[in-house]
Amino acid sequence: MDAQPVDWDLAVATARRLVRPGPQLTRAEADDVVADLHRLAIQAERHVEDYTHLSPPASAITPIAVVDRPEWARSNVAGLRMVTTPLLERLSESSKGSLSSAVGRRVTGVQLGSALAYLAGKVLGQYEVFLPPEEYRPTDLVPYPDAADGGPGPVGRLSLVAPNIAHAERAMSVAPRDFRMWVCLHEQTHRSQFTAVPWLRSHLESEIGAFIEATDLDPDVLADRLRSAVTALRGAVRDRGPGAPSVVEALQTPAQRAVLDRLQALMTLLEGHADQVMDAVGPKVVPTVADIRAKFDNRRSGGSPIDRFIRRLLGLDLKLQQYKQGGAFVRAVVAEAGVDGFNQVWHSPESLPTRAEIADPAAWMSRVLGTRPSISA
Image (cartoon, rainbow, N blue to C red; front, side, top):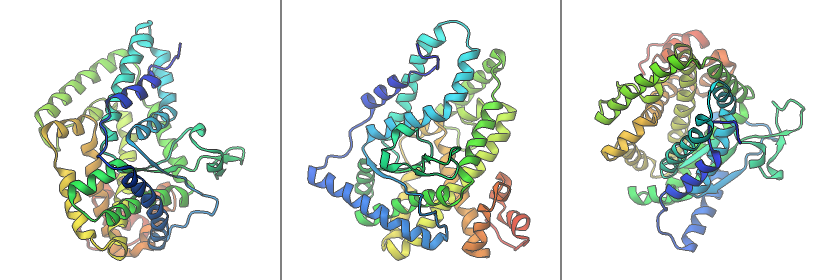
């Protein structure tokens, strides 16, 4: 029997069973969306590199996958399995009795599959940083600078969820070609971040490792934290607002919070940078970018009460904050120091902004660039 407390195959099966079908498209319409996304993703790569001045090495060939909802869920299970295996193995070793390894792992598999089924209908695109080697075709494997033996290794994959993009452009009544390019600009920015900044992937892996080391597996402590999570869940049900803690936050130890503060600052930077780039490049290559941005922001903040509840339960409200806070940080720095000044953020892990500096771009510029302009985020 698998020692890990997650039934990964059941997670995939659950997601496939629960995921909603995409919009009704004819075969010709579906083929057109797929071909268009492949073409625009390639074009967006050059637009992003020209604006950001981030130039990945020639060997950093990133596969482009245009997928449907079930395939997105399946590949994310594979990525989650790779990232969480060290933590889950620790949890498994600390577990006493067979219930956790038999019934518990199936329950966890169903829970994970259910969450991914919901997300599979929302995500437009994703740069998949962590994928196991078997997820790549042989032609996808290229020399990777962090590979211990200097041989081929993963470079990440840019995935675009065709049915979700087609559904969103129809729901918002926006120009399909413009919206598809706009999405591709965002995802290609993430691709440039991880391929042009050689230390970024290993730094993220290190922080995830630090989070695992900070995980307290004491049963009494976990029970107390679970009670806090129940309180947070009640707050989510009552829709208390952005100040209420999410279930994810309620389950954190003090040591984990320190690591997650750094991780949240990093993810806020990455998402904000992608959001800023798609709007900065947009006017040149996306004629209707202003209309798309206005409608998309309105769509992000909307949704039914149950949709808002699920977003808070899964911590997705934090994701929306990352776009806003990170975008404000990047725009403020670029306005004062230009793109090359902002790019000092990629010099080393020490150059990354803290959570406090995300809210105070002038403080980051004072520390990293040696300037203290009078700006407001």
